[in-house]
Image (cartoon, rainbow, N blue to C red; front, side, top):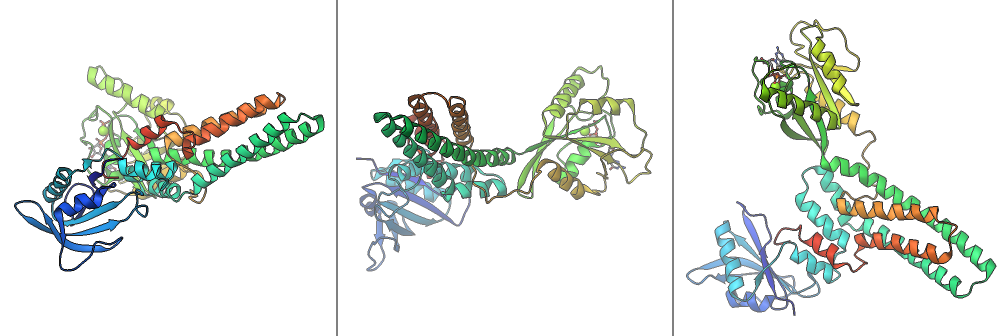
Length: 441
Ligand SMILES: Nc1nc2c(ncn2[C@@H]2O[C@H](COP(=O)(O)OP(=O)(O)OP(=O)(O)O)[C@@H](O)[C@H]2O)c(=O)[nH]1
Ligand SMILES: [Mg+2]
C-alpha cells in the first residue's frame, strides 16, 4: 500500500489562498483527525465543505474538498484544504497532517502517481514540468499543446503502426513464400516512408520551438563609447549596465532578457573592443569576441556622430552572420556615411528602439510561428524523437537486408518512441522526469 502524501500545492509566498493537498488511501481518515465540518454538512465527492481545522491551541476556519478515487488528479483519494492566510498557517496545517500519518511528498510525486494510475501520459507529465518552469508566453503555449495530449496521441499512433508492421513481418517469416515476402517488403517500405515524414514534421518544428524556448541570444558589440551599454538599458527599459563617457567602462559581459512577441531574447552587452594594455580589460575584450561568435544574432554598434574608425572595421570582422548595424547617437549631427543594412537609433532619447526590436525578431524568427503543428520543446523528448528518426534512416540504409534484421530495426524505432509514451517500462526515464517536479505537483 502506498503511503498517503501531503504537500502545499500553491506557490509559496504571499497570496490570498493556499492549498494543501493529501493523496492516498488514508487521505480522508487523516483529514478527519483535524477537520470538523460546520453544521450538518456531509463530506462528499467533489463538494466544498466549510469547517474548522484543529491546530491544537487554535482552530482555523477553512474549506475542504474531497475527490473520491479514481476520480481525482492522482487517481487516489484526494483531499484539498483551501486556507485563507499566510505561509505560516499553511505550513502548520501541513505539519499537522504529517503528524496525522501523511508523508511529505517528493518532487512530482502527485503527478507520478497520476501517471502510474493511468491518469496522465508521460508526455503530459513532462509538459506539466515545463508549464511550471516556463518563462515566456510562447513556451507556455508549446507546453500546453503537449499537455492536451495531441502529440502523445500521434506518437502513440506511430508506435501502433510500427507494431502492425512487426506483426506482419512476423507472420511472413513463419510462412516464407517468395511472392508473399516481396509484397510485405513493399508494404513495409511504404509505411516506413510515411512514418519518416510524420516524425520529421514533429522533429523540425520541435527544434525551432526549442530555440525559441532557450531564448535567442543577441550580442551587442562595438568599440568603446559608442553607446552599447546605453543601448542595452534602452532595450530593457532599465538602467542595468553602467554608462559613463570614460572609454572602457564595461569590463564584463552584462546580460538581460526581454519577452518580445512571446519569445525570450537574451541581450549581452560587452566590453568595447580596442587595443588595451589593461589586464582586466583585455580579458573582457576576449569575452566580447567569444560572445559575438556564439550569439544567434549580433548588433554591431557604431557612433553616428563620427567617422568610421579602424577599430570599427576590426570589430565587424569578428562577427558571424547574421548581424544588424546599429547607428547610435542620431540625436547628434550625422557624420558617419550610410552603412549597408543599418538601423538608426538614439539610445539616449530612446528613438527607434521598438523598430530595432522588431528587426531583431524578424531576422531570427524566420517563419511565422505556427503553434498549430505538433511539437515538443522538452529536450529529452526531442532527443528521443531524434533517436527514432535516426533509426528510421538506419532502416532505409539497410533496406535490402533480411526481414529479420529489418524487424529488429523497426523495434528500435518503437523503443525510442516509447521514451515519450512511457511504453518501454524503463524505470530510469520515469524517475528522471518526476524528479524535476516541485513538491506539491
Ligand atoms: N548623444 C548621445 N550620447 C549617447 C548616446 N548613447 C550613449 N551616449 C553617451 O556615450 C557615452 C558612452 O556610452 P556607453 O553606453 O557607456 O558606451 P559603451 O559603448 O557601453 O562604452 P564602453 O563600455 O566603454 O565600451 C556616454 O557618455 C553616453 O551618455 C546617444 O544615443 N546619444
Ligand atoms: Mg559599456
